[in-house]
Image 1 (spheres, rainbow, N blue to C red):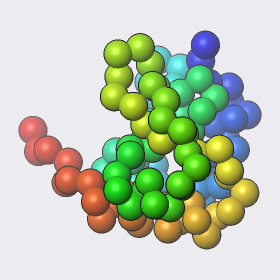
Image 2 (image 1 turned 30 degrees about the vertical axis):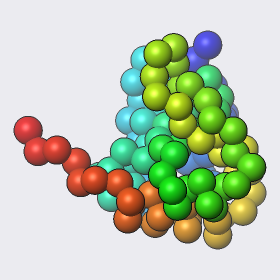
Image 3 (image 1 turned 180 degrees about the horizontal axis):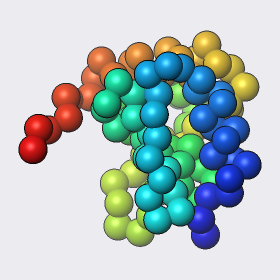
Length: 102
């Protein structure tokens, strides 16, 4: 099942930060923050990489597979608290490695 346009727009709107970009791939969306992949939207679920800081910010978040065989990610269910979402973006950015240069 591909992500609906309404749900993807809801997530992108909730993240509303000038440094957030996204790329559509096979009906799903990869989410970038300052050029680092922080997660994506898969089957109408907003999933982020499970860094230590993200786990602390989202203590009740479940782990979920974005697609069969993929690494588990944290499922972000509350899109209403933009302050936590912006803190989450900054936390993920600080903990994730820089993108590899090709």
